[in-house]
Image 1 (cartoon, protein in one colour):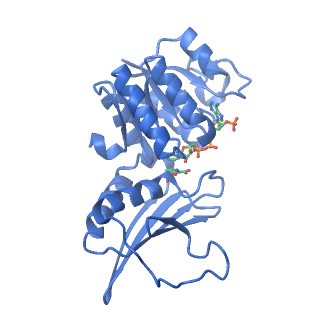
Image 2 (cartoon, protein in one colour; image 1 turned 180 degrees about the vertical axis):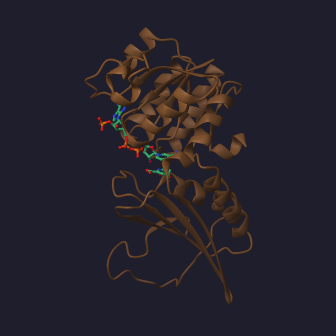
Image 3 (cartoon, helix red, strand yellow; image 1 turned 90 degrees about the vertical axis):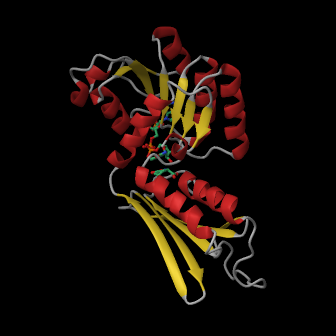
Length: 263
Ligand SMILES: NC(=O)C1=CN([C@@H]2O[C@H](COP(=O)(O)OP(=O)(O)OC[C@H]3O[C@@H](n4cnc5c(N)ncnc54)[C@H](OP(=O)(O)O)[C@@H]3O)[C@@H](O)[C@H]2O)C=CC1
Ligand SMILES: O=C(O)C1=N[C@H](C(=O)O)C[C@H](O)C1
């Protein structure tokens, strides 16, 4: 059995992941973490009335109380780096969905995992369709270097652009390199009109109620266009990837960035 803790269990993704771990063969939910939870056991919550699992308010108490193989993290950008670092230092394999990591932070965590010879995963998007969308986009960019990314999310999202949009831009950049797009003399009449800029690639972030997680990668060329789009209509779409991550990190000896490394 793989012993798993879920950090951020009261959030939208943390709750979905907690239920997945509870129901998944081969996984044992050994604890959940939320700094503001008043309950001390999951069985105090109606939907978990038969689940005897401790609720922790801080990460130090988790490691003092339960033996853990995997740390699932769906928290907030400002705490996820420290949580991931802490997990690795404690010999726990992180499976992190929280977005907002800088490139430097990811590199530091990879280095730490290598020193600890411990597997781990930071995946900006756990949906298999989203991974394919990123891979197809990188492939298309070789032939269609002019591209803009439009990511669309619910209006409770803290970070912009999304982790998926950044990862997509990184994968496209690795394929196409630096490229000047649009008119060289273009001017923004309202600042931000052309979106964020990643090595010449524009990224536009839409936040609206009703949306879950959607991204369109739009390519333009002479007389033709190509649009690659992925939609997550439900947070269940991420769970196959989270489960796969929890299984695969057990055999890895370092942390990897992106679910595509495990497929
Ligand atoms: N990789 C992927 O496939 C996906 C990634 N995400 C990412 O996952 C993250 C969470 O998203 P979502 O569930 O929608 O957000 P929510 O706001 O619903 O959940 C975040 C939760 O984290 C809790 N939290 C805050 N601080 C801590 C802490 N120190 N320790 C433990 N928990 C803490 C919050 O608790 P409180 O409210 O009490 O402060 C809240 O319940 C985001 O970064 C999002 O971008 C989302 C979907 C898919
Ligand atoms: O906040 C979200 O909801 C999501 N966040 C991730 C991101 O920033 O890319 C993954 C997915 O898009 C949902």
